[in-house]
Length: 257
Image (cartoon, rainbow, N blue to C red):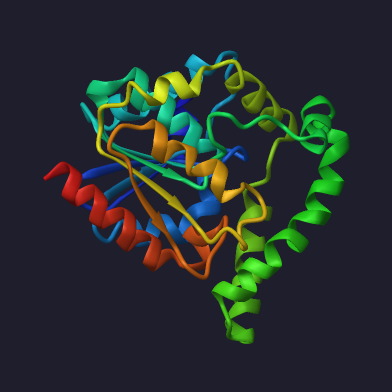
């Protein structure tokens, strides 16, 4: 991770330290509402995922974040693909993981669908179709989470602005997914010793990752707790950031006190 990447980190708030790992797009900016809300009760740290050559390089980037922030350990929260990274980190860096939160992540038995496999093979060519289809998948969830039409439109505009300001790199996204796939996540989950919480939205509203897939973590991680955020789906952390922050913040304080 370069010095420039470190300077672009989010680091705000006081309280128990919490590192939030973004999804496969790799940009912390997409999660800004949730990070702002979490900073009210935790020292919340997030960062953009760096280019890496191996999956362990990705895990080591979290070590560097902790080291450069003077932290021996922290609660580790991973969103979507980041949840898989967080679980792997908790299994391999047990002393550095004070608590684990997995949010709407593909479960250990997940394998790419035919459409997803095509994206991994041809990420740049597949991106236009991905960008066109994403709003159609997300809109039912956004409508359920934000019933007021004016507020819903405001959310759509501001979230789109965040995405445009922090653009994706399709090849890097595909590389992250490919690097993570050989890692035996199911076996790793059984070795996790930290208190763990698995968070999802409603099954009918998450049209990105099946809730049943995410719930695999509950059965595999010893003692893991589960919380479903009603009225949200895959992006509940940004459509309902205050509620998300209460769920995660309460758990982090209880787990680290």
